[in-house]
Length: 201
Image (tube, rainbow, N blue to C red; front, side):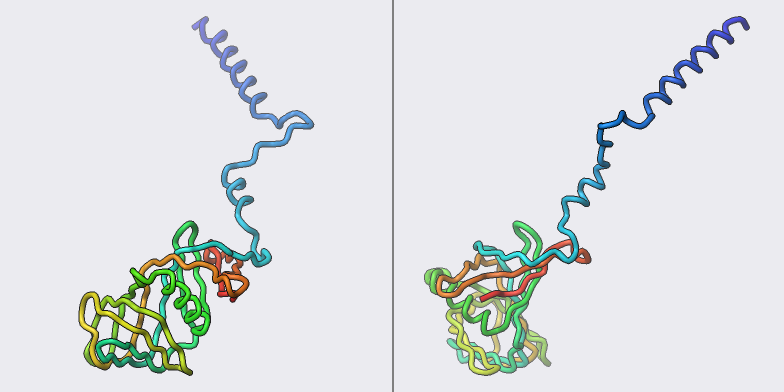
């Protein structure tokens, strides 16, 4: 029983040292920033001014139209959407849009540099008889809401006619065009935790 008193004293002493260790840092010493706060500080602030991306970047493009016709060589899309959506996964996640006129300029500039291996797309029709195909698309031509491509079918079935058409390109590296200024203008959205961009050419 006599051991209890010294032992109690030792416990009180250890508790005192622990309390001292938890006191605030000395004046002039900045408190450590929690890791979560550090990560938050590194993120762009909402409302940040737009930035411009002017480097080659890998995109997937999505184009839609009301209907298509195909004569074995030329794909014609009618009732084409006035805008084309794109997504980027690397080196960061980005979502955005461009006008179809901007899409045609970028697509043709890319096709001109990929003559031996033109970009390919997944083409889906969702009309009365749904179809799917992988096709290789050459240069594009736009007239009003009609878009045409020289086309080679790689896989699947591309019917002579179809409705409710969606094209999604394979990931392809697109580059800023020499003849125009700008490429992508982007801002950061806290709701997406990624950049949201639009074409700027």
